[in-house]
Image 1: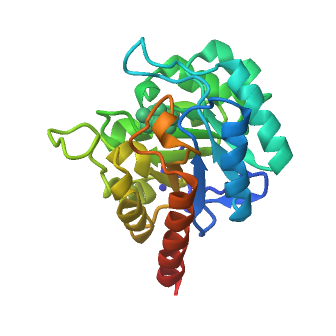
Image 2: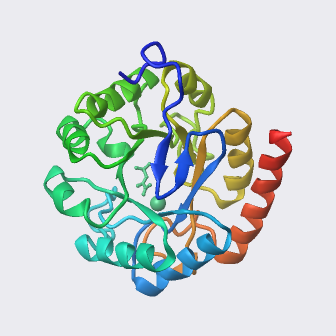
Length: 265
Ligand code: PEP
Ligand code: MN
């Protein structure tokens, strides 16, 4: 169902008026994890000021260590909903447990399925059944075909609003947190009709690489870019090393819009 052979036209996902996949670039910014109202609202204000519509923030955090901050859970979703209503934004948040989906869809606009859960087939089916738009991230060691099959799981349940997100894969390279597989973008665009995002934060794990990789994403035809923004990354409870502070975010956005505008001509 997700194959280009089954549907030639691009799938466009409408998120509170933002037409993802319709030809422009959609930007998803926000903190790694929801830590509190003030923290999310500060980023939301900056997102809004830029005329953007999409805000991210993790409430259920799939952390590599069980001793790291696990997220605020439903309380985090409540904060996201409050901020989304106040700033008229659409919010994207990861859900890790099928049992949480039913409740979560009342708070969020897009269900994110994280890299670690890309082949959690029960979660994929539940996300298909929940009917909300889904942002599906590529697994840490998933092939492109496995990634496409994961999207198929969701669509096979009747949910056609799926966005794919390349977020880097595990290789022997240690200079970056993961290795951004930039060629996955045009391949996914050829093989499927779904919008494709590139998450420059989790792929690189390096603040100094966010802008160059975002430029590359746009140049190869991505429909969107995701990056993490925190009002004070130094004290962030997760991904402290790669989130942008607000002034850095302002500069990043200015430069990426320049690239976007130049490439459009
Ligand atoms: C995230 O986007 O918050 C996240 C945990 O990313 P990933 O699943 O790609 O590691
Ligand atoms: Mn993160």
